[in-house]
Amino acid sequence: MTQFGMVGEIQATNGVASDILIIHADKNGDTLWTKTFGSIGEDRANSIISVQDSLFIISGEMFIPDSNLVKGFILKMNAQGTIIWEDTVSDLAGKYGVSDLSLGLDKIYVIGFREVNPENFDDFAGTFDLDGNLIFQYTKVDLAQVASTYFSEVAFLPGQNKIAIAYQTLNQGTFQDNYDVIVANFFDDLDLYWLDQFRAINNEGLDEAGQVLATNDGTYITVGTNASTGLFANTSNGGSHIFVMKVGANNVFPITYNVNTLNQLVEIESLGIKIQAKISPNPFNEELTISIASKIPIQGIIYNALLEEVLQFDIFGETTIETSNLSPGAYFVKLGDRFYQKIIKVN
Image (cartoon, rainbow, N blue to C red; front, side):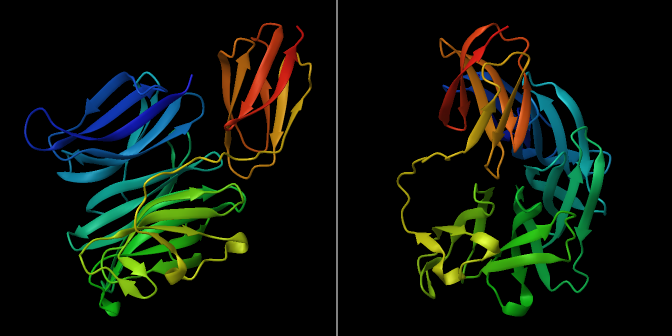
């Protein structure tokens, strides 16, 4: 059954601070359950990803009374709303927040910020395993205090085993009037001092990244808002426009003033992903092996002859699925948004 998890914040019942809001809904948008929790301070959830089977990783910011500070948090929750584990993130003193998450190969990439003061931020990054054990965390401190930067969006690139990150930067040396966007590749160990390749989106006014998403050709796309209206031009009304930037093969970045700027966005259509797949054996018995050529994880669903969902799984590369619980008969396999073939269970 297709379900959705949505996270954010809601005004607390008592006081003016915010609490964490989590909504679990079905494919029709009907709410299955709603969960709110928090402290006496400001709490909010900023990101949610699905991991394993019907489990979610959620992150954001939470007030910790013992330290009297807001800290970044990460937690694992099942589809019934029960918290399996939770932890806070920070390796230095000060206020922290987690901006975004991405699922890698048996690890979770965590990015965010440390607030030095309301006008100065440092980058934060870390990794956890799926059981909540901290593998690595690090804050990049600007000792010269000439720049304010914070990580905002992250995506794991499975074909390259690298990380794509969009982050905001305000560098006093360039006389910027507001934050710009840097889109960069990092190596898997998330060494914050070593970028692989990068490109800046730098206009007069505020430039922000809204999402970084891996694509099925092994690179990624970044969307957000910027202050540009065209070639070397800037908005004069204080507003901003939507930008779309696609990184090409071999990590070829577009020239930033050629980044597609959309004055209006009125409709979007999903074209689907064409996946080359091999499903065997067919007929099958206890196990079914599916291999795909896609460079990003794909959701798979098995339906019975009445087109009722009986099994859901995630596939990247080659995956073997346990099918002993399925009754003999005809089934259909769906990968992504495309049906592939009819399969037969014999015993």
